[in-house]
Amino acid sequence: MKIALISPPASGKGTQAKWISRKFDIPRISTGAMLRKHVADRTEVGMLAQEDMNQGKLVSDDIVIKMMEARLRKEDCKNGFLLDGYPRTMRQARALESTEVPDVVLYLEVGDEEIVRRMSGRRVCPNCEAVYHIINDPPESEDVCDKCGSKLIIREDDKEETVRKRLEVFKEETSPLVSFYTEKGILRRVEASGSIEETRNNAERALEQLGNL
Ligand code: AMP
Image (cartoon, rainbow, N blue to C red; front, side, top):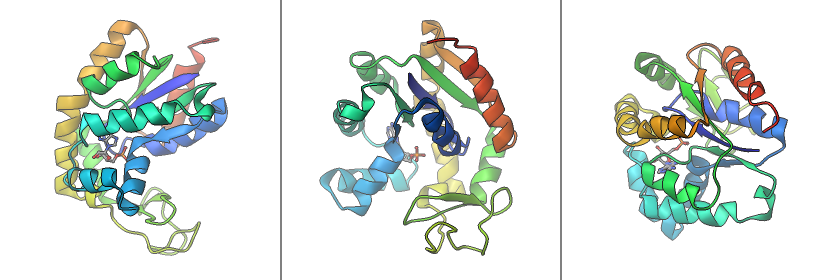
């Protein structure tokens, strides 16, 4: 099964991606996580990507498309994959068409104010990438990662001003993909403004309706 997730920031994409990848036994490929690793490792890609990421902008298509083409050629993608955050522009979607057409694209829908509210409580672990929310999903001790004990941080691109910028970018660059995949008949809308469990149930229902894809 080849699945792509399209969603505005803070739609719970990462959280949903985890169970979907387990359920279908397919690798979760997060472009955001791959780019953050490049930044942490100070690679050439990381140097080029860092500023755009910190400002809530998209990293250039050339970089991301090249990175993803190499990733999708790997052995573990033979039986499918879950794309978490790719494609995000029409150019990326067209590049994907020429290599790997998704079977289904899930669009997680959340209202703008809910997104900003969620982002302001988000904390992430800089070491293992675990994600928490100070109200909805707090760690056992304040600001400490349950999994590895590192001190939690607010990601630079989760700050309110940056979130608003990311929303703007989403509307301009990514939302055209919704019509693109709707026309192809492979887009499934998933209501994602409720709790993690409600969103999961909605996504499960959308995936069940696919039958034996
Ligand atoms: P995410 O973890 O998916 O929210 O991604 C974090 C940041 O990485 C985004 O705000 C972008 O700056 C960058 N990024 C992730 N995926 C892409 C993509 N497909 N195209 C361009 N930039 C991306």
